[in-house]
Image (cartoon, rainbow, N blue to C red; front, side, top):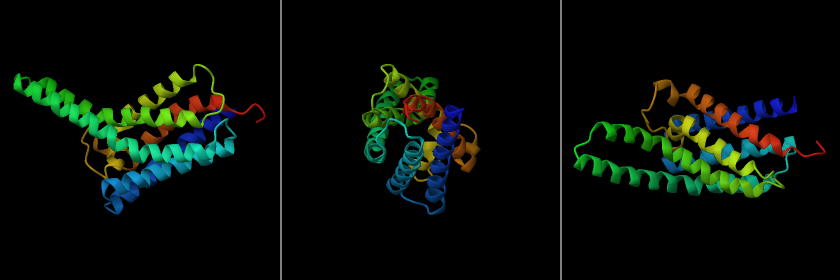
Length: 201
């Protein structure tokens, strides 16, 4: 029961954080770097509050600092690396006269940044965990990468200042899509974090 309750609350916190950041980014027409900062603050704060109340074997202060700092600094790097690589691939395929593969790669290029950023941020967050089980690292990276891939259009829509990503149905880049992306990501990662429940809890 405790595990299910924690996962539900953690998923809800992530969903609300992304939705609030998205509302601010789209409603106030924020520049991408301001929108990214708002998203980082909302995610770090919401996650830290839930983790603190759940008494997990995690340093709450370190988690907040690593999540906020990692999101703000690593995400632009991930976007840059993936997009530059995509441009090189597009150029090579175009030179060979291949069109269909270029279209598929274009969609993939917009999905990968969120997953890549998620893996980097997950690596930083791992240092906030106390005495994690031996197999937790692989599960943690996998959950964050999958959450990034699934929620990429909605997350990138918010992180890029309400930019039109254009992958999937239009509702993905709306409050409904933001909530669903946050809930899915929170569920996947929350299931892993639940294994860090303090023995005294």
